[in-house]
Length: 379
Image 1: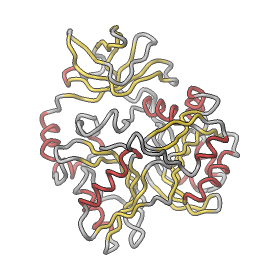
Image 2: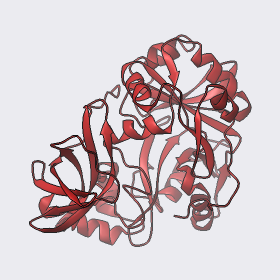
Image 3: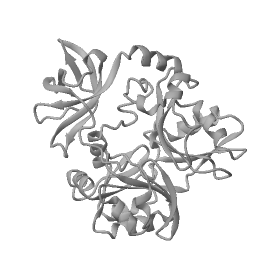
Image 4: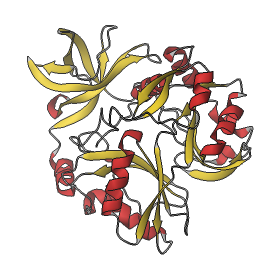
């Protein structure tokens, strides 16, 4: 999918001036001016999120609704199922699900989250898509949706994530019954004097929440949460190391239009009815890969030394190239380098010894199970 043009002026989230006031180092990301780190640094931010509660501005993500003319969930769900391999028809009210928009050959156009928000004019499906893909995603949806389902962009909303083992206690100070919200479900609540949609989800591997709120109220919410000593702001740098340790894909790196959900080890996100019944783009390829195996597989890598491998590093075994690293870096929680990437399926078993070429030198590595740091979702 196309990313924002390199020469386009950077967009700003509603919290940009607050990031600067907190001393953030701002960088271009997906067409936005975003905080990569605050003065304490990425390592401290990463460890703080694992131990307490980290606050992330993810307002650059695309938020939208699928609005069926008849107000019925089934109408919007059927339209979305024609574009992705997940079971949307059987989503329960307030339930959230992860899936991918697929190209006709089964490649991944983008990955996204959807929530069944209710019947009626508000739309029965709420979407969150990646910032760098959102304009292409919206164009794709507008071109492919049936006439009786409309895409309603929600550019007037901001999105804030609160992640970490103390996130529930922090939020409970403002929403006392938030502990009853289950993982991958969503609810409405009032916080910082405004209505918000809160889901128990995130992209760090920790328990936490994502809060969608009117853009003009996001600053009030950000300020309120930062008054709690258990909360610190976290930038994109730690967000990346956290999701890497959690074994979670980053679109445009670990998954893209050249990878299928089967190759990417995302079969868990395709429910049995869809895997068997098809009816989505690339279904023939995906069903064939499910039956016969894909030629390559996304895997993790652990290292014997302390040097990290970065995206693009060649993976070798038996004297030849067998794959490539798609994400890599130092894992602060595991206190060691970690990486993920693709290898030929014959080498995809945990424990297989490989070499990863870094600055023309081979690093000893082992195919490893993911996640590298255990997930702490509240099931």
